[in-house]
Image (cartoon, rainbow, N blue to C red; front, side, top):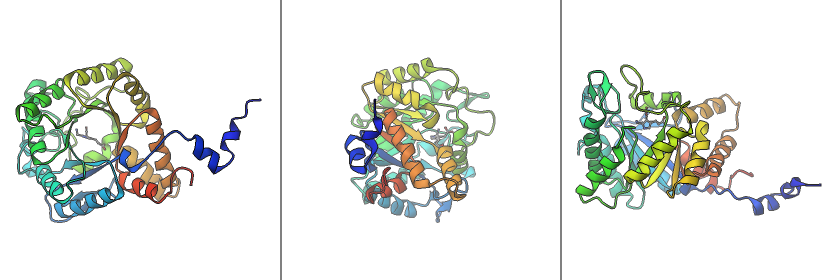
Length: 328
Ligand code: PBG
């Protein structure tokens, strides 16, 4: 008789046959940063903060110490500083630019990723500029290019466009190259859905659209595999260096598909709502947080993600460093 249990009987044999590796370097920690004096806890994301520049330096130092693969920054702007064209995104003295310069100075060996989008900086909260009540594609491209250049000049090692405008990867590549930043890679949010799982993020970044929703640019979860393949093919052809799928858990089939089809590293973003669900259940004592997080991250790695953007990155990296992996 076939007897699969033979290879599960002891920790030693399980360790021998285990294929999926999860290491701190596979995790990227997202941070929110604002120009306020103090860090502010984010109610819907226990353990996460709108960091001040000072607390960001401290938190990023901890992430670096734990060996995470990198950090990704999101700027938070007070309402009165947002405007129609999202100037805060491409202001060389903007919050993310200041944070990048500071972190690069403190930790030259910590990989810095900048989220390249306008929604945290526009008064209307959309990811591009408006013409009437429509998010206009082509006028947005130039602003995304400017944002990426400004971020790279400030110290971003990688730029990550998330606005879901058509042609944004090509526009950003051209802008970077024209600025002499040919060495800066693009991590494209290639397959990004209009998802209810972004809810807590929009609280955190105060970036909920003031009217309407993002369904005219972010993807329809029910569209099907063709839409994901098309988005990935276009970003691949436009020069994306890495392809991301977001959110992660409801879209692991697409993580796997991109891994099979493209000769580029694939990333997955375990988003705010996915983080908060686990936190909420853990706070009630309904789930063992450590085990659930490690199991989740392992599953995303098995699906084909080279690295995972997750608010649990620092905690998970510490568990892994302490030898508290999946089998403990
Ligand atoms: C910016 C952006 C969003 C997220 C990452 N980049 C918000 C959105 O598209 O509404 C969501 C991340 C998360 O929920 O953790 N466009």
